[in-house]
Amino acid sequence: MPQTRSRRRVKKQASIFRRIYGGLVFVSAIIVGVYILWPMVIKPPAQQTEKPNSPAQSSGASRPENPPEPQGPVRREQTYNILLVGVDDGHGNADTIMLLQYDIPNQKVGVVSIPRDTMVNRDWSSIPKINAAYGKGGMELLREEISRTLGVPIDYHIRVGLQAFIEVVDQVGGLDFYVPEDMYHDDEGGFVINLKQGQQWLSGRKTLELVRYRGYGNADIGRTEMQREVLTALAKKVLSFGNITNIQSFLKIFNDHVDTDLGWTDMVFLAQSALGLDTETGVTTAVLPGRGDAVKGRTKWCYELDPVQTLEMVNDLLNPYEQPLTLADLDLIKGESYLQDY
Image 1 (cartoon, rainbow, N blue to C red):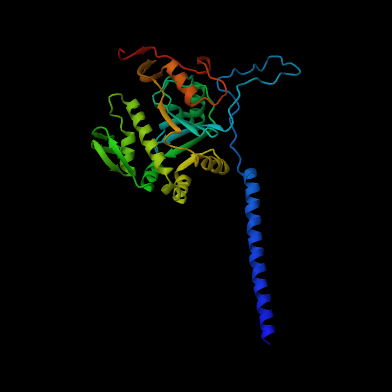
Image 2 (spheres, rainbow, N blue to C red):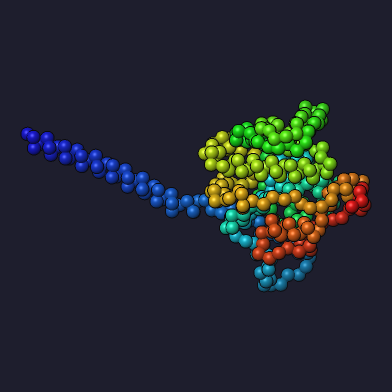
């Protein structure tokens, strides 16, 4: 009898072992399958192949029977240009415009702020300021004008409402930031800016006041510089370990307030790649260089881009091609007169 019970125990233990072993094999198979299939599902996003400002072929021109392959510029692999636009909820024009390049192989990010009053070459309006493009033709027209002006392709866009900005700042616990001067403005539309100079903790609402203030001596350029500093500080805080673990909350904010043409697999790929980014050494931010007192037609205080400095910045931070761009690749215009002596 004891031997019978002993044999039963052995059989039961063997059965449990087989179940555990079978479960481990099943889980291992899933892990291996995911490892194999992941690269097939999560692939690098597509890149824009058409070069801006390339002359279109005449529809009436004769074509050779065997036309040669186009010899366009060669793009660096896994290097993406993404347009970031902040829009004032309920208003037409773009509030913040930035062009970001993410060079994944070299783990480098360039972020160039584009002043809202930047003067562009357009034929659909006598007002040459770039921010009007969004109100007239949305993201498509804004992308087209920025791409043509700077001579670089734009692969994707991300449009963010002001409420998303407030919620992201609050989600990371606010920002500790130095306010450079007393700031007060009442636009009589319900949005009041009221900040005191000094180091302080800022909520999402107060941070929004900071980035929307325009009362600097250099007006829109001072505002653009402040936006760049604040967004850099916010990005570093979002990418910190403590906030990456709170990804579900960020996803909700993204779904509620952000519009983009990036697919979910594109976003997963870029987010996974960004885990290897050192925000202290791998991120460079800048503002397009120029002067803000140009007059074009009846429009005053346009921001005229400096050709030489702009070309240098574009090649350093935004050019996705193997070869450098030249001034002939950009579409920059000059003012007809100026309001200040330099």
